[in-house]
Image (cartoon, rainbow, N blue to C red; front, side, top):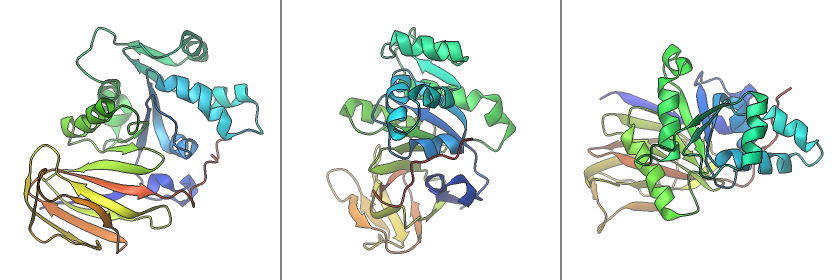
Length: 264
């Protein structure tokens, strides 16, 4: 079985990252994580999902209280705003249109979430086709209404061949497809120790791990039975092998992360 390598190197400053991974960023309509400027710097393609543009416009200047708010808004210009356009304010939309942001109104499509719409745009983008595939970082995907969270988790299962990480100020979540054995390299100064492996969708008849405080050994997991929550990272490399797709989640530490960007 092929091995899939995972690392939260996007939480490190760009000058400390040498993985060669290329990222796209999707900003959803929830409070911005404190490390959003860092994710923005890593990203080669930056999208706002509908009301996510309000968050960039309103909240990013607050991260830089000693700088002019308009200068920050001009610096952090999304490449694309896409969604059903029921949340973005008119003044915010006009501001980014004047800066040259591409706006895609998909109000005719009420069967997919705004995150889903943005994932499809990234998957079909020239930048994605020209590389081995962009890893997608989605902020604001967690917290707020539970039905929104469930819809965002569902997106992970809709596109298991695309690497997508859902992020909040407190944690990250990503899918570990059953088609691979997984090696998760822990950035111990920035994430952990709390973690979990959750079988959403289908039960797991057998899951085996290494590197956790409470490892699994051909263990069955299912809702209504055992699921691995409130586990702890013990080693700097975690391995996971399962007969079912699993969600991996790990806490993000409040200290050690710099919000400052290095954009000239």
